[in-house]
Image (cartoon, rainbow, N blue to C red; front, top):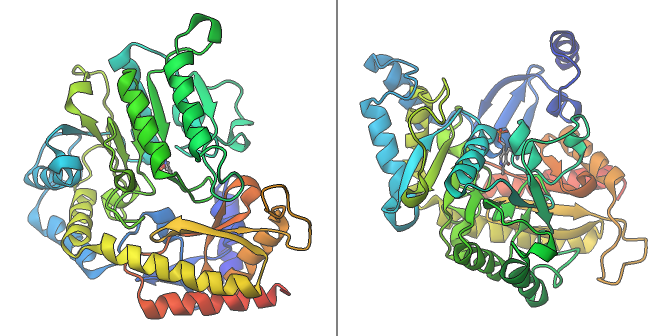
Length: 440
Ligand code: PMP
């Protein structure tokens, strides 16, 4: 049963496990939005491999593309040597970047999101000859040393003294807890003032950075979409000052937010686009999209063994084609709005859902204490204990979702982008069941 598998695994792996603490199951199989555990219980999966499985579990076209590679005789792994499949994948991926990718080139990095972030940071430093990076509160970029240093969450940093990259953190807009301040006009003007007047001014103490790195919609940080004008101002000032703009699309990319890339909501073009998760269609793959003028690598400056996973390129290509050719982004935008509207109805009965936010099928609900007084912005205090309890009650009701944000108070949904209307309705039923069984 589940408990036996979990107990055995606890002996094999050290106590650094994360997900099994919250989701205590052993998975036997999965299909579409469904996961079945070893006790034959079904769960509606609103985590989808942390947003990796854009088409859900075991999509038939994904499985077929794996079969095709196996029967073609291609090697499974090719370092960064090319193959007809890599050629096709690269051409297709590049064509999805802004302006059909005409100004960009690709770089295959190691297989994880963090690997790609490391490569982006190194490239920005090399290109500009500068050392520091600007990042944002609540940003998440991975757990390796450089990526962790630009991650705006002190929790995982506490275990490690000293970071790899010099980082200046700035506040990221928050539509609920700071609706006007940072993302509003005053905040945008302050940002402009910072870049235009303080950077590299000897007396201000602000060193000119190599790059700004950000997510256009923060995921782990609690599902925070950045206001469009804020993103546009950052693009403008970074361009004016020769600072590279790195946009991390590892989670928000590939139709998740209702556009192929989340930065498209602001109509901007990053200098470096960080891609992983869905780009590999469920298998490990990470790629940078680099504006050609900033591709200053020389041979040998950045490499790595696992950059040629042919199965991941096959599943990635299948995913990208389905996303593009079936306009999945457009459908995701509609489903996301519908879902948020339904959750708003639920919020009227359950004021513990303090705020509903997100774009497309990247949706978050901040859990609060409605019985306690609001602050000057009209927000109730967050309720971390209830958020934990709700995640557990959801699990008991057969619903897998994750938490994020400050104190883990935001319930996060990252389901398959192909989730149907019927399945979304089922999600709402299960979620309501969880709210009721938490005694609300
Ligand atoms: N960037 C973002 C925005 C992410 O959400 C994540 C993973 N959740 C990463 C980077 C790191 O990716 P990985 O876990 O594959 O290293």
